[in-house]
Each structure stands twice: as C-alpha cells, then as structure tokens.
Length: 539
Image (tube, rainbow, N blue to C red; front, side):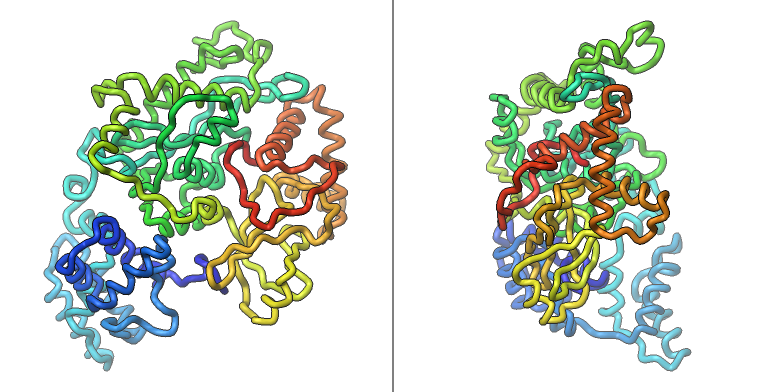
C-alpha cells in the first residue's frame, strides 16, 4: 500500500518525533551546536540531521522525514521483537510507576528478564531511546499524578494560556440559535451547526464552518483548511471588505473527546503538518473556556436575528421562530463572517486589554511569521477521508462508482497494491488517488453522463435499494435511485421541512464546488481541480 496512511505506526511515530526536532531548527536556522543536540536526542549523526533538514526545507511536511522502509538509519539498533516487547512492558509497568525508578534500574530489570529467556539484553542507550519516545504528559501523569503533570506540561488550573499566535488553538461546535429557510421557497429547514477555530493567544477567529449536518470529521477538516489558508478570496466572494489576516499552521489544537476529533484522517493530517492534537482530560473544563465564551457571545448576538430560537424555552416565550425565519444558510454564514471580522476582531477583549486584531498585528510587529504550507491546495486533500483500492487496467471502484484516469493502465502494471483514494463527500464525481510517491492524481467517473452526487445521497439510495431487495446494487441502479429520490424530495419540499432541508443540502454542495446540476451540460474536467472551501456547507 502507498500514501501516508500506508506508513506503519512505528515509522510514522519516528517521523513525528523527528519533525518536532527538525521544524524548530529549520525555522531559526539552528547552529551546529543546536544540530548536535538534536542529533543526540534523535540518536542520529549530525550529518544525518543535516540531510533531514534539507529534506524538510524542500517539503516541510512530516512525510519527508519518514525512515526508509528497508532499514533503520545509521545509529539505530534493530532489536528482536521479543526484546522490544520486554522493553515496552517494563517502560509501561515499571518506569511509568509511582516508584519513579531511574533508567539504569529499569535497564537492569530488562537485562535480567532477557537473560532469563535466553535473549541478548539491549544497551542502556537503546532503552533510553525508547523512553524518550514515550508521551511525556502521560509519563508524568503516571509517575507523579495528574496535578504534577498539569503544573509541568499542562495549562495552569482555571486557565488556558498561549503567548504567540497559532501556538495553541481551540476547535469546537455549537448548534446555532436561529431557524433557517431554504433558498427557493424561503420556508423553514431547521437550525444549522457552527464549527469554530479560535487562536488562544490573540483570540482571533481563524476559521469557521456553517453546516446543515451535525459535526463530523469533515466539518473539522474544512474548518482547519479555511483557518490555515488565505481568506481574501473567501471574503471577496461575500462582498465583505473586512481584514482577516490570519493564515498559517498551528502548533497545538485543543479538543474535547468527541468522535469526530478521533478520526485517523484528522490525526495523520495534523501530524503531516506538525500540528499536535491535545484532548481535554476529565475534570478540566477550563480547556474549552475561551472558545465556549466566544460561542456564547455569538449566540447572544444571533438572538437579535429574525427566526432566533433564543437559548431556552423560557426566554423564547411565545415567539414563533419558524414563522419569523428569513435567513438562508449562505446569508447566515455571511452575517457571521461580518460580525466576526468587522465587529468582534475590532472590539477590545477584556482579557487582552486590546482588540484581537491589534494583538495579532503586535505579534507580527515583533518579527513573528506564521508557518505556512508549501502547497496550500494540498491541505484539504491531506485531511479528506480515504479508502484503499487497487488500481486496475479498467479503473477502480469506490461507492459502487467506476473511476478512471488515462494513466490507470500504467499504474496497474507497476502492481503498487492497495493505495489510498481520497474523496470529498460533497461531490463524488471525482476522487484523488495517492501514489506511492505522494502525488495526488485526480480520477473522474468512468461514465461521463453520471451527475454529481453527494455521499449522503449515495447512502440513502443504497438504503432504498436494500429495502427493495437489491442487496448488491450496481452503479446504474444507484444513480437511478438517487435521481428518483431527488424528484420525490423536490415534490415534497413544499410540504415537509425535512425534505426542504435535504434539497438545500444538495443545492449547497453543488454551489460549494461549482458542480453542474443534474441534466446540465457537463464541462471538460479540470485535471488540476481541488476541492474548495469557499462555501462551507458539506453534503
């Protein structure tokens, strides 16, 4: 298998460990003494660290630091699986205990166990190397307790602080206190969800997503992609003349323990760009304090909008939210963007003593420069979900849909095995095959007359076909079921709020990706097309 997701956990963990050392050296052009210290921590030669620096400067992503599969770099000692198991067990049970033994004592115990099993004991250096790879937060927590871990490596109790922009960001969701209407009939379709990315140091909003669907790993991916990238075009498309200067990769993302934050695609995507995921420990409500307060502020302002649901039934009283609803999802998104970039960013923040925008500008004035991806178009692709498929001469299949590329026969002849195929749930008319070299190759549907469909439409069609007794539906049957479903939804949209919401979700997905509606004349596919984040509605 190829691609980032095909890299085994051990090699990927080593690449992540290297990235933590190499990135700071690359940013401040470390001298030979700093390189030598990094080499000792990585158990590599100085020359090898310089080679890694060269690699990282050409491609500043974690994947450029992955050890070769054929063997370990010079300086690493390959131990037998049995010895590795003994080391890992003793580090977990003995070293990470309240006894807090020194490494030499752990090494003696490992040597004793190895000799008892007729195995050659590892060196103290090998044990130390593996101990350094342990999660230091968890290690401190195991050896000294939760409070000690918080005082050494965590935020002080009751607060979450950061001194520089993008060093710590928070991501969270909330159900917006406003009823929306669809674009066509202007009738109620329910409340949307808001996903927000906040910079802790400056309190600047880095990005946000408004969706008709509940929070998912994909709404998180879209929010991160918008937060990292330049937002000038996004603002211009909404006729907003405000300044939104925030761009760049983060150091650490603070998250709660929701399922959408635990996805493998999110974890690898963040590690790819040197962004650490830090999950909220139990009993630490202050971790979400900053972003939750901002969301509360935004919801309070939403209570002034027509169609507001207010924050509780008592406050709402006899107000008929659905009868007074007038805003579409796109209009609410533009309104939120205006409130954030035009009002909130320019209002004095009590904790900062100045506006979020001036805090950001002050950091820029010190010479601070955000870390930016070499290829911004790749960011969203690196976070999209994926499935493994083997390229064949006649194409490949995903979601019962045949996909094709002119080079498919060449790829199949090389016998690469299963490769990651990434997809955007808003539009299944194309997917991206990740080659063993790390390139993304865009594949289009094999049959040009297939209309763009969303993933949720595809799943609904399969459910209908299963109910009809078609357990193994072919591609034509799936698209026929989707088309029939669209006609039913359109006919019911005048009567049912759920039907109007479903129709609006599909409409927004097409608008977001400039996809033609069913029956429209198809354009020649653009081979350089990448999914957009300008419209944040998903699928």
